Length: 537
Image (cartoon, rainbow, N blue to C red; front, top):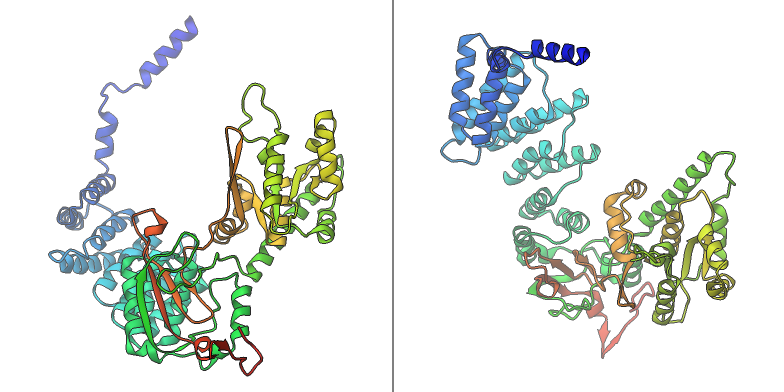
């Protein structure tokens, strides 16, 4: 009790007699008080009040302005560059504030540089916007330029039709591993079209294909204006379209949906807007769109990364664990690798088994395996990957033993060894064989993040098969028959999906862009002649 009494008395002594004492003390700190008021102006978008606070602080000489004060003021100025009534004031005062910050010897951070770059861009001074970012980047440090830091200079140059300067900004961004987004790619595409740089237009169409997918209405207008223009009709690939076989090989090597060898065809382009059927057939030109896969180089890097992760795990295994080399599975797959589908056995067997009598459902796994067998055109069995411990348990059950033995003997089941993540096995097999992967696993582990998010999402869209069991009935959700991305065919035609608020794919607008190609030219009396290099359709 005495101790408790002492504890209470000490707490009582620590409680200030005036509960507002701390607040009053904080408010007497002019720097904190100014920052608080500036943040309030920022939240309420009150530029005039913020500038008045700044002027008062400068006049009084009682406040020592720091980086946060200047950062908040510059951000607020840059927020008003689109307001016609305040744009001039925002730019002029923003420059004055920045000059004072520099003369005070304060260091710059990315947020401050971004705000000043925006002010310079609004003034039409792309050179200064680019210079300040370059100067900041050359200093180095923990705060580094981002997309938003470079974007003002790039967009300013593009708007003023200074194409070469816009390309220079892009080169700096590439060197800093900063990926462009739609607004920047669209601006570069537009300035390239406006300055009749057809090869650059081709390049940025492919940038949109790679990084964007569905384009916005605004970007679709830029694309349409280019293809409807006279210069687009003059663009040609210097006879590349006559090498039909080479173009087809390039499309296959790239994973489908594009060849990347340049403009194909001749004459004026025809631009139509329409829809695509549920199977991927363009209803404007009847061309079949592709389900775009990852290209060969990307896929091989993916496979190599998985092998490296498995080897790293082996190196970390302790002495009590039986060391099994991942290469054993690689060798086994080389000998038996004629599969069209890989099955994540644990994911399927444990699906919806979180109830009292739930366990591993071999019947669910069998249903998936049989369905894949019947769906296969050549009646091929899929490959099941299942942990060795799970396989041993199934073999000990007389009810399951015969089926599991049959799968093992027929090369339908591979038991993954202890100490290894079976995810690596089924993912490696699917990537190596370029086949389907049946699993509901979202593959969000940090291990998968190491493989590259953009690539991995594309790979999953093309290869992952999801499934459901409703009242015991299996339903496989196969990959979509076509990809909703910009596509370039071997004939030189283009198909561009336009973003829509409507999620119904059947109602999505597609731009169908085509013109006379060499394939059309080679048709004589309903037949296709062989081109000079021996290629034919």
